[in-house]
Amino acid sequence: MPDTADITMWLDAAREGDRDALDRVLQTLYQELHAMARRQLSGQQGHTLDATALVHEAYLRLIGRSSVKFDNRAHFFAYAASAMRSVVVDYARQRMAQKRGGDLHRVAELPEDLEGGVRLDEETLGLDVALTRLAAVDPRLAQVVELRYFTGLSELEIAALLKRSERSIRRDWQKARLFLLASLQEP
Image 1 (cartoon, one colour):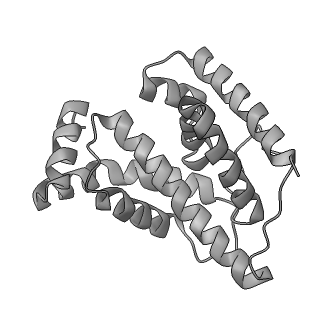
Image 2 (cartoon, helix red, strand yellow):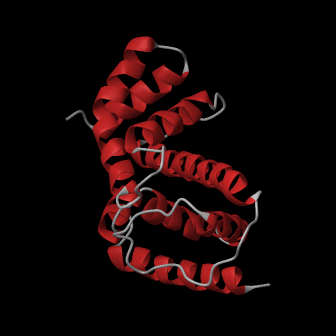
């Protein structure tokens, strides 16, 4: 597998319009993104959003941001997590609008165990609002939530990606969960 410097170089070239670089990035990172998406959408039956559609839509949003420069692989995956969040939230909004005329409901729980994947319902919409509030207070905590919840990375994987200790990521995850739970319970 190519090293991080190669991926960063290809990402920059792809953003500048180099089709070959874009193809190399897709070939190199597609399987990782697809595995993340598949893991997050597991258990979601009867929805039209599948892992392939999620990755493709997230990638189009990601590459469409012309002002974004990817410093490294971690930066790319942070943006990918944000793009996946955006796709999932948009999909959930669309489903809720069709199902209930757009009613938003707050939830009182953010699961510790994410094995079941991201829910594609009103809970995701409530989480998105709370996560936006968290990002305004502490962007680092919001990034950990995006990587953990929307891409399904473990604390160990996030620590490696962000070059921080697993213990530090675990503390950030716990702080973020407390903030989000409190935010979700507000009237």
